[in-house]
Length: 84
Image 1: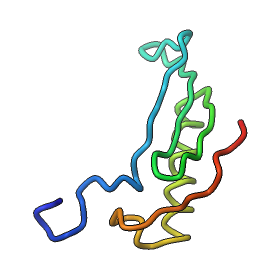
Image 2: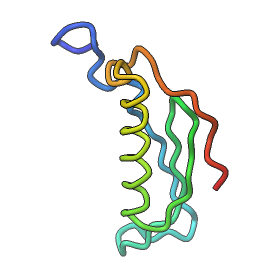
Image 3: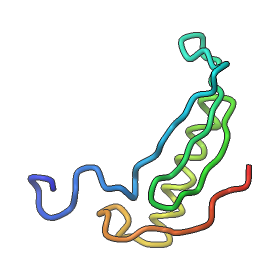
């Protein structure tokens, strides 16, 4: 819990797992991998930092729009994962 009340500082509804492919060269900017939203299990593959950030931004926007409580970690979107 955070020091500012009952809302967690890092709610699980805003957590993502990023997995880089074996061929990714992160220091060189060659990003290749998969990202998954922890609480909804929505996932996507990415080939650039822009694609990675687009997915994260889209999921956070949709989750917040569907359930404003998602920023507190009390509820979340349970959409099926993307089939990419």
